[in-house]
Amino acid sequence: MPLCAVCGKEVNLKNIAYINENTFVCRDCFPQYYIKNICKLVERRLRGESPLACNFCSYKKQCDAYVSKTLKSLS
Image (cartoon, rainbow, N blue to C red; front, side, top):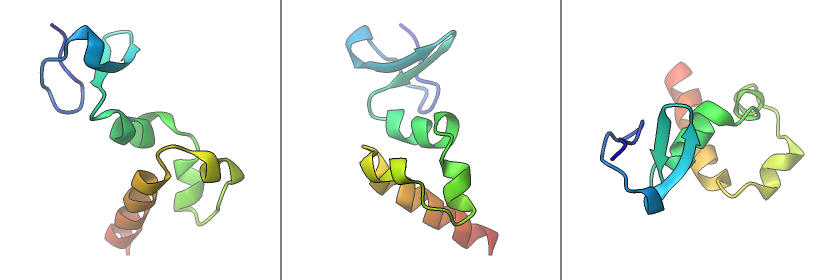
């Protein structure tokens, strides 16, 4: 069985949320992986912008927490 790239646990096929070449991500870790590695708008949010597309994102709450935590650690 493949291993999740984020948590390192074995993932069966029904619990894989993302596959890209040799990268497998489980359903539990996908929001975190998406925010840090896939979403192109996070950089804009870190610069203080508020892209319209973020209002419709399924992971907005997790992203808000990530952006807040990152900005606090930078200041």
